Image 1 (cartoon, rainbow, N blue to C red):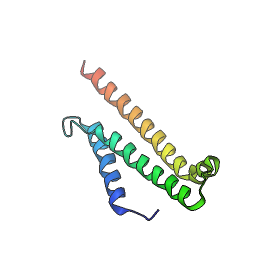
Image 2 (image 1 turned 30 degrees about the vertical axis):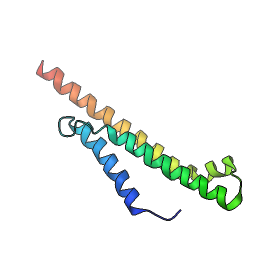
Image 3 (image 1 turned 180 degrees about the horizontal axis):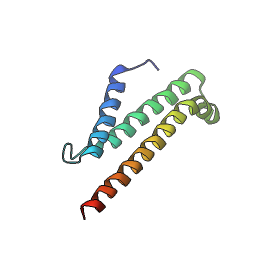
Image 4 (image 1 turned 135 degrees about the horizontal axis):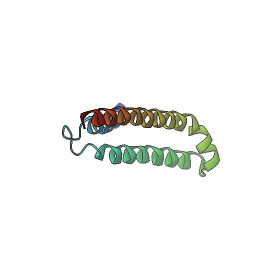
Length: 102
């Protein structure tokens, strides 16, 4: 599949909308929709890769497909853990400030 900068741009907008939503939900009330957009785009890309492989080889070896994409998935998972860790630390400090105000 040929690189599509427009799709990367849409994915970036989806991710940024989620980040802005997490910073302050009032800034972008529908920012959580970015998660859905990201998953739809990812599904489109994965389906395109599978269809391309079907057309070229007339079969799809799922284990080969998964192993060839494991590197990319590892990057997504490591970024997810970093985001969860950062959010947890942020929420801890916010809770501490709330406790001090009380």
